[in-house]
Amino acid sequence: MPKRVISGTVIKKAGDKTATVLVERKVLHPRYHKTVKRFKKYLIHDERNEANVGDTVSAIECRPLSKNKAFRLLEIVERGEG
Image 1 (cartoon, rainbow, N blue to C red):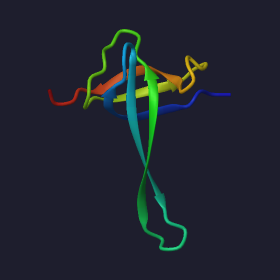
Image 2: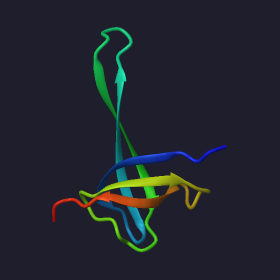
Image 3: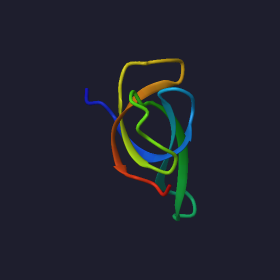
């Protein structure tokens, strides 16, 4: 089974080797047929502490590294302002 790849924006550095990523997706509302945004936050493992707040990153699914962390940093797509 292929691993999931998510992409989002780093909103917080959550301790050593961990970053919080906000993933935004657009879905069609079932009743009003309007596109609405849905958000979810993921903790990702950043082994070399490369990602900073504001960066756009992609992460790939891996084995559970802690209670809430099951993704690791794949690449930094775009550097944020800073």
